[in-house]
Image 1 (cartoon, rainbow, N blue to C red):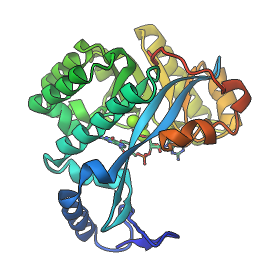
Image 2 (image 1 turned 45 degrees about the vertical axis):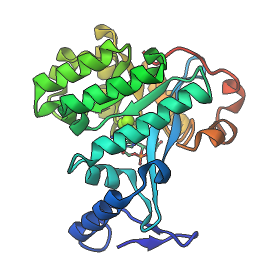
Image 3 (image 1 turned 135 degrees about the vertical axis):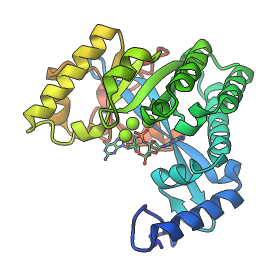
Image 4 (image 1 turned 180 degrees about the vertical axis):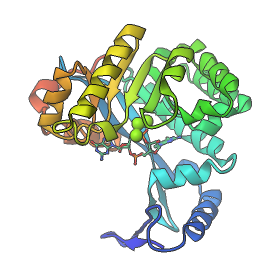
Length: 288
Ligand code: C2E
Ligand code: MG
Ligand code: MG
Ligand code: MG
C-alpha cells in the first residue's frame, strides 16, 4: 500500500494504489499501537508579515513516523485518527509538545496549532485542552488555535461554545482553509474569531486568475471590516507575493517563505528567498 523511499521507509499517501479501506485499516491499527510521544513530532512553518518580513508565528504541523509504516502523510493519519476518540490522544500529545517547546526552547515564539473538528465537538476534549494550556504556564496569548469550518458545522452551538472557551484562555482563534467549506460568511460573523486563513487553492493561479484575485481582494476587505487578520496560505512564488500584496494581503505562509521543518532547522534552512530581510526579526506578537 505504500512506496519505498530512499531511506527504505514506506510512505503512504491517501488514495494511492490499493484499497482505501485496507489503507485506513492498517493506518488505524498502527496508530492504535503507536507510542505517540515517541513517534509523533511537530514541524513548524513560518507565517510572515510581508510588510516588514517579520515572522509573526509558526504553524505547528504534525508528522508521524511509524516504525511499521514509515512516514505517514498528516492528511491521512489525522483523518484516520478523527474516526474515533484516538484524535484526542493525538491532539493531547502534540499540544504537549508544542507547549513544551514554547516554554523550554524559545520564550518568544507564537505558535498556531491545529485542532480537529472532533476535538471541538467534545466538551471533555476542550476542557482537557484548556487544562493542558493552563498547567503549561505558557502565556496563551502566544497561542492560536486553527479550526476549520467543518469543526463547527455539525453542532454550531457546541462549536461556538468551544471556541469561546478556548478564547477565554487568552488564545486566539483562526478559521483554517477558508473558502473551501460551507456558507463561510455566516461562520465568520457568528464565531469568536481573530484570524482567517485563506486556503491555498485560491493562490495557486492567482497571478493569471482575475476571478481568484477578486475573491481574495473581497476576503481581505471583509476581514478588515470585521477586525480580523487574514493569512494567505500556500504562497510559493515571488509573483504570487507581488499580486497578493497588491490585493492588500499582509500575512502570508507558504514554501516561498519556508517549508515546515523541525524547529531546530527552521531558522537555518528557511527563507532562501527572503533571508536578508527576515534574519533576526522574530517578534513576540501574535498574528492577530
Ligand atoms: P493545514 O492546516 O491547512 O496546513 C497547511 C498545509 O499546507 C500543510 O500540509 C503544509 O505543509 C502545506 N503547505 C504549506 N505551504 C505550502 C505551499 O506553499 N505549497 C503547498 N503545496 N503546500 C503548502 P501538511 O503538513 O501535509 O498538513 C495537512 C493538513 O493536515 C493540515 O492542513 C491540517 O488540516 C492537518 N494537520 C496537520 N497537523 C495537524 C495537527 O497537529 N492536528 C490536526 N488536527 N490536524 C493537523
Ligand atoms: Mg492549519
Ligand atoms: Mg490551512
Ligand atoms: Mg489547507
